[in-house]
Amino acid sequence: MLKPGSAARIAAIGLIGLATMAAAPVAERPSATLAAATPPMGWNPYNVFDLDYGEEEVMAQADLLVKLGLADLGYRYVNVDDGWWLRRDRGTIEVRTNIYPSARRPDGSTSMRPFVDRLHAMGLKAGIYTDIGLNSCSQRWRPNTPNLPEGTVAQREIGTYGHHAADAALLFATWGFDFIKVDACGVADYGPDVEAVRRGRFRAFPPLIVRERPAMSDAGELARQYADFAAAVRRAAPGRQPLISICAWGQADINDWGLRYGQMSRTSFDIDATWKTMLFNFDSAASRALFAGPNRWNDPDMLEVGNGEFDHDHLVAARAHMSLWAILAAPLILGNDLRRLTPGIRDIIANRTVIAINQDPAGNQGVVIARDGDGEVVAKALATPGHKAVALINRGRKPLDLSVALADIGLSPDAPVTVRDAWDGHVVRPADGRIGVALAPQETALLLVEGRSLEPGVSTPADLPARFEVADEGYKAPDRTPARQWVLAQIGFRPYGEPLMLDGRHDHAGLGVAAGSRIRIHLDGRYSRMTLDPRTLGSRSGRFTIRGDGKVLAQGTASATSQPLSLNVSKLHEVELVAPPAAGDTVAFAWHALRLRR
Ligand code: GLA
Image (cartoon, rainbow, N blue to C red; front, side, top):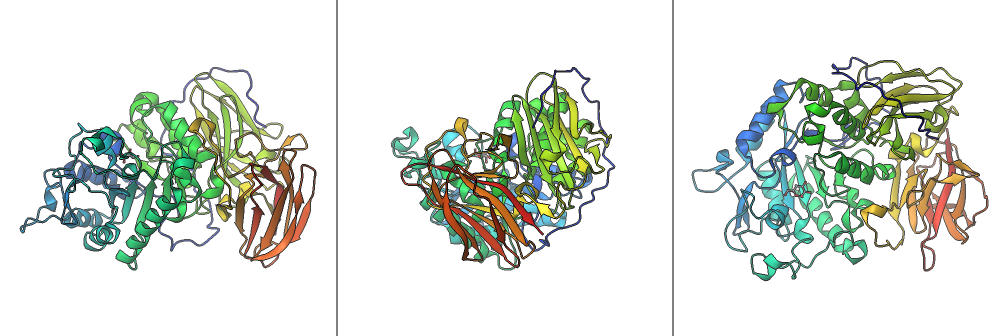
């Protein structure tokens, strides 16, 4: 358990240099053929420029990515956001050539090919932006912003709705883009009652997303649109794998299925350069470790490192922000103006050890181990067994002493262990089986811990979350607000976020799930035995089924009392844990104490 102790005031950490610690991990799963085997890295203009930028600014940033060595560290995607389009004419999108002059062609048509070619010639990748509806976010929310589409109502419909095949062919086959962010205001914010729609400025689009009302949203149709767009992109780019970044902000339950159609999917509304929204967006992804893995990354939004409350005057907070995105295995898309980069901010975005934690080939998202007041601990299992990255987080504005037991992050307190700070390499010495740090306000300690597994040869879910997939199996989502986040399945916590307790102790090896969920675990024939203890959380009982490669391995009625199971899983490719929907309500279920033995 996490132990917030007496607050001790410590000096803020001084300027840091590039860490020199070696990135050790050995690849656990060969995944080089995936479009996004590790979290995508790059740069996007929106956080710093909104729509007020063009080709010149983008190219200046691209040059700096190369010159400063950031591209070599992995920041390769240079992504255009909203605002690149002038209009859609006779079905085809025209580029706004006053800000993208290289797109102007002698015959009067426009093409982003020269822009893409220049980025490719620099060794970079090129990203573009669309909306899954008819219109974009800026058109609806920022009518006075520069560079909005122009023309008639129909010409200003620059979103991809109804144009998937043609747009995908233009953007990926003709122009050669590598990445697309697919926003969703077009299917959320243009209902018939919206004033600009009533005034005839835009065509009405009956919303598929009703913000913060999943039960009123049309998740089925939204999924069909994203699936169809993804298929069109695949067809337009045979032999290539352009990356699709879904931007539906966690609405309409997209967190439960979005990663099927995109390699990354936003889990919350827009970040801004404040500590509060940074934490909010972190939380929206942090509870979803079971959903993420290679080629499917939770996206808490682009980085604000270098901006506002994370600028050069706030290096402790900036390091915390970067540490949190690293431990989440979140995409690292820079959102600052590299022309104004200070050495302090450069050292944060360019720290090799921190980037290696984010890019670790096992692709495990960090798992929340404990939360108590302003203190939080997250641990990310790295590819080398017994190696973990651990973040001890002070979310608050007062100093905080924080510690975590080695056993709670799955490491033996009796075996030798080394603990080093990922930012500057300094050694932290565990005491009494715990790792403890004194944290300044808003400070996160990001540590690399090398020890021995608690039980050699045995893995718990937190050791391999990337091997898990979660699916809805008939659960009816309650209407919920972000203030009361609810997650279909998570490690060590119940669906509404309370710690999962077993016999009076926090069960870090258990899964708290909703009845009506299905958990698939990819074993790939590597394990011999699975032990677990299915129980309902509450007084009602519930039926469960466990399948191995499609055949029933165990079935029964679980209640609140213990029912330990030990199952032979040798040679099995996958097992599925099914908690069928409970009649009429939302019985919560626990797959307690889940262990996989080699
Ligand atoms: C939405 C997205 C942002 C950005 C803007 C552009 O708000 O969530 O990331 O793309 O649109 O208008």
